[in-house]
Image 1 (spheres, rainbow, N blue to C red):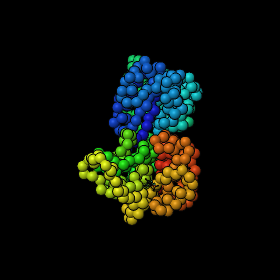
Image 2: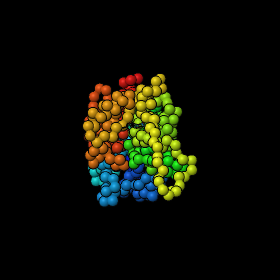
Image 3: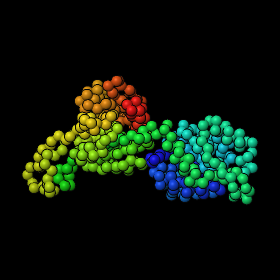
Image 4: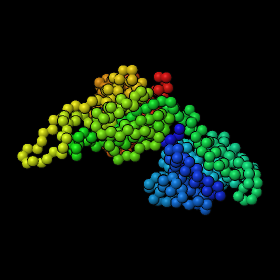
Amino acid sequence: MPAGKRILLIVAGGIAAYKVLELIRRLRERGISVRSVLTRGGAEFVTALSLQALSENKVYTDLFSLTDESEMGHIRLSREADLVVVAPASADILAKMAAGLADDLAATALLATDKPVMVAPAMNTQMWAHAATQANIATLKSRGILTIGPNAGDLACGEVGAGRMSEPHEILAAIEAFFASPAQQPLAGFKALVTSGPTHEAIDPVRYIANRSSGKQGHAIAAALARLGASTTLISGPTRLSNPPGVSLVAVESAREMLTACQAALPADVAVCAAAVADWRVASPANGKLKKKGGKPPALELVENPDILAALSAAGNARPRLVVGFAAETDQVVENAKAKLKRKGCDWIVANDVSSATGTFGGDSNTVHLVSQSGVEDWPPMSKDEVALRLARRIGEQLAALR
Ligand code: C5P
């Protein structure tokens, strides 16, 4: 199941461009997200509006658009995908790719990407058979570019022969086969459990104690684990975030509900506790709304919440093979994390340096150290998505070693 994967779809000029509308629908049905780049030639055949409506994502059309560049540079655009698909791939764009030209957004993204690229050629049969096109295709294949089609048959120009773009279902099958390959899915067959977000601890039916956790890091970890093939359950307190694609979400409010949901989600191969669980809850929440009666405000007696990370680490036979916790620290980050590793009984602690400008609650970036029994890895500052993917890859390596 490739749900959660991201495709950058480059639509070049060709009558077959209308078929990519169907392709986008089928990809979306499978939980694959699509971002599109429409070339000037492509825009002669389909509109940006159609691509946008079907992909539910912004469509990028011009390298020199300042607004696009400020929102999302062409480098990021080309890298924030698991696969780049060029469909239809015209003779022109194949020639640009082979030559390494970068004279528009599509060509630049193709030159800048560090991700696998699949092309679905579509052109007149003579253009396809031409020695120049065949040499370009051979060059691209030798560089590891994946190709699908073209098919032989009636062409829109009235001629018959090779040059028809593969049908959407054929391109979809090629994409699914690509994502199913073991190199892309190191966590296939593994089950992951992730906690995320804050918890809300009731004072009365309308008031609660909470914290400022955004859930961004935990949600990003769940998304990354799912992308690498793990069957992933995300147990989250209330956040403003949408459910990451390909992840099953269990929404909870309090720490006790989170613990119960975690226990129900076992067995799992890996548990990542990224939630900012409230340390305390109100001992006896009021059944009715507390009234301001004048005089003294009510005293709140607090009791300690269960420690979910420690409970999962001590779950006996049901203990996940790898239990990962987080530690937000402002000083002596690594020392404190080592102590926490022992205290909680987990295998790894991702120690989060919250003293610097990065790594603050609600932000998009993080500076972390991965602390385990066998040592400490210092990771450079990076986005929460990058931390998530790197952690998911390390989890994949570890589970493969423990198998
Ligand atoms: O004890 P402290 O809150 O510093 O530990 C942080 C780690 O423990 C995080 O991984 C957090 O998700 C987890 N934790 C938990 N249950 C609690 C408190 C913290 O799972 N009640």
